[in-house]
Length: 232
Image (tube, rainbow, N blue to C red; front, side, top):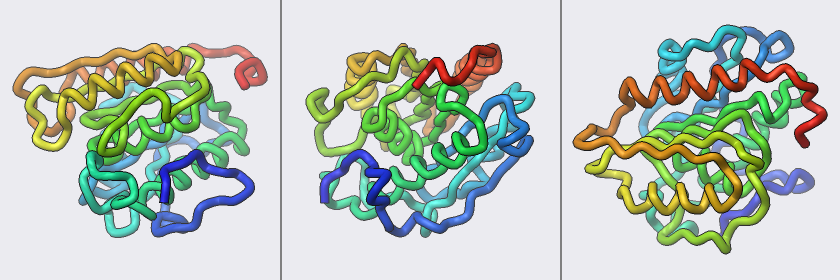
């Protein structure tokens, strides 16, 4: 089973469909922006939502979907894509569905941020590369594009200068720094505005500089007051 773009006319049905979504902040119809937060392997929607406490995000709606069994896919993100199906396609569909729901509530993609940690970072970066548009931001904390190898010829379209932040340790036991570098290059080729930070000796965690990088992207999104119809 390949890893493809979501087909809105033929939605994928897999383990992560119909799982609960945890939320914080104002209702989408009343929010100034939204952030979709994707948890890592063995974690929970509730745990990734705790990271929202670190952000200065007045008026932001936070939505965190839950992976079935607390894992989006069973093996390393460096494994062949076929080994991690149907979880991968199901996870991409879950992100797609949340974006569609938020748009239906009046939040344009330009004001939707995608954030993930670890396995969640892999899922959001892969989603953005396969469904390029002008998002409010894409944040991959300790993660990268998915597969036993990656290359630009697998992706097409434009992220239209979407701010992308990739942060990772140089000694992360799960995420090779080479894959972070490759991911940054491919996202840049898709017209993203990529900021990449490799932190010396950091554990598999989130640090204060990464929090500030995210806060900067949030501030930029909250400053947008143009008509959303401009950015389709």
